[in-house]
Amino acid sequence: MISTSQFKAEQAVRSDTVFAGDYYMQVVKAGQTLRILDLEGNQAADTLFYNAHDPSERYSAMDTIREQGNVYLTTGTQLLSNDGNLMLTISADTCGRHDTLGGACATESNTVRYALEKKCMHACRDSWLLAVAENPQYGLSKRDITHNINFFMNVPVSSEGSLSFADGISGAGKYVELTAAMDVIVLLSNCPQLNNPCNAYNPTAVEMLIWD
Amino acid sequence: MQQQVIDQDAIYQDVIDGASHWSMVIPAGKVLSLTDIEGGANVSMLFYNPKNLLERYNAPDTLKCQHTFKLTQGHCLYSDMGRIFCSIVGDDTHWIDSVGGVANKQKVAQKWGKRDYQTDRNNWLQNGYDSLLVEVAKYGLGKRDLAANINLFSKVKTDDEGNLSFVAAHSKAGDSIQLRFEMETLVVLTTCPHPMNPATEYPNKPVNIVLSEAAAITADDQCLNSSAENGRGFENNRRYSCQHSHHQHTAVVGA
Image 1 (tube, each protein chain N blue to C red):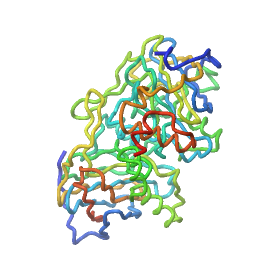
Image 2: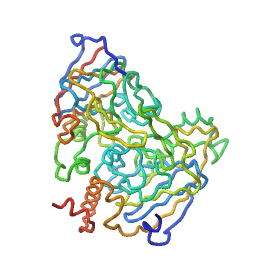
Image 3: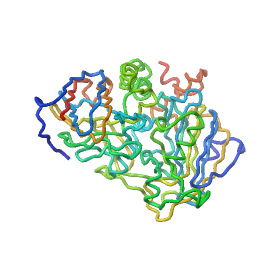
Image 4: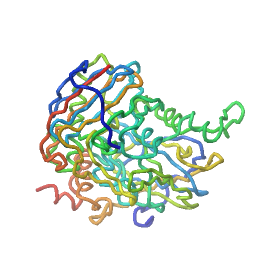
């Protein structure tokens, strides 16, 4: 469901531009709201969330979609942890639908999806692994690189059980906002995928804004 | 189907009780057949590479590379390293759930009432989450290592708006699923009920398992040929095990 936000960019307590192929790793406190802004349209923002005080508690795609009874994420979706606790709620969404089934690109999965010779192209899971290596204070490792959300991605599922990567429904200036119910680590890879027509083969920047 | 994929007598046969958990390391070239004895069973499964436990079943990679939400005969189950743990070479149920996950203690208590070992001994109402947690702990793994699992014998479908529903009475007594292992794999499983099962009584359903030798993979193998992606997945396995080419698909990727 499409919904807009009252937050003004100039009142944000923090604002970062994340270029395609880079990662973003920040703590968002309980009660704060995070906006992910698709600056140029149809960019995939591959995102994981962890409890900042115990990262073994993390976003769980399965628990989230099972408990809301729907595979798509949008306004009102409660993002649940593997312990069944509320982590964040989607409080505004001008895109209307986000994916949590398609996962993130990896060099290895690129060999299967596209071609064996695509194996050394930059990929989201490499960005995440660099993020956890460069931020040892969080104590994360490859074990923690799990099943993520793809904000702005459109991955329709049919009643016959098919799944496809469809053309995006996002556009320049569309955004999604999440209000944190606990202190969370946000780990985002701004997807560098060059093999998928869903971003017009042109990965672009996103902006991350936080309000108290 | 069984005649085509299994070429010898069973190596062993066993029954896994309902509400239980088990694990086994299965070498490449074996077929694990699971049979729903009474109908309405559920087997939640996870897969790991025993030589590198950081390599594990990856649900999104499996679904997106085969453009599917359901899993059934002809599909392969992928690790996060682009390799195939096993191929689904038989599935009488035609739909294996890919997203339902497992129930935890609170959910089981909510749905079917709280019971404990002290009162009920082995008829207590085990939950799938704790079952998997205990079973992976035997290999030094824990909560952080529990990835999205599959649920054999269970069907969760969506409508056109993405609403999920559990299809009751999906698996019938005698329905079988055959998994052919394409690399050495640690299989972790629980027979605890599916978290979306609407049954009013806790479903306590056993499954029969049989391990057999797989027949040699032929050039027209269904799983190998069901998509170009699976051809490349098999090629990744071939390179991992450093085997000489023995499949038709090497011609596709060797150019």
